[in-house]
Image 1 (cartoon, rainbow, N blue to C red):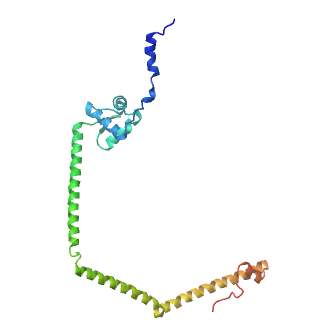
Image 2 (image 1 turned 180 degrees about the vertical axis):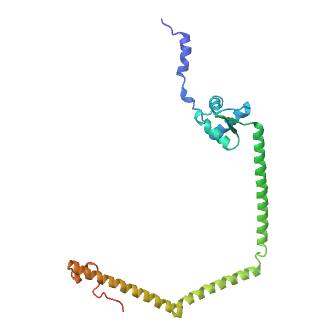
Image 3 (image 1 turned 120 degrees about the horizontal axis):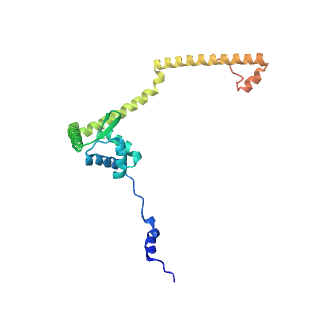
Length: 226
């Protein structure tokens, strides 16, 4: 009887392993890539060219080769990595001491902003308290507020009454007359234009006047305004 070799069974077992249990490793975020890139500079305390980092970063820090240049440039833009062009090549470096000083300066700036904000808050709180002075809910204040509301109501009522009598105002009457005159002249001017068009249509096409009026909805009593 043929027996399967033990060695063959041992070597074949890995091929039967269910790989679905192993999930794909998550990629680094943009900020994680920046941190990893800074680790290269801090751990080595060396100066690099871009081509050097494009080899080291993917291998040692898991940064994808295509993103090395962008990550490095972002750190240069934020003054976290120094850069200098020597000859035809660009060199990059970052030392922990500079990063420490940068963090200290940033901390000092934030502390200064916090102090200013606290002072401003204190000043505003004082202004609010001063503004409240004299506005306490007293009996006299309530009485004055009620009187003010009544006076405003009375003013609105008088304003409505005045609007009713505007037509009797000589200035208003004169303004109405002027407006009527302008309107009358405009109407008669358009009337004259319509008569001119009707006359032209009768001469040009031989249309009857009644047919023109009916076609264009012109009333039979259409005429100038006296």
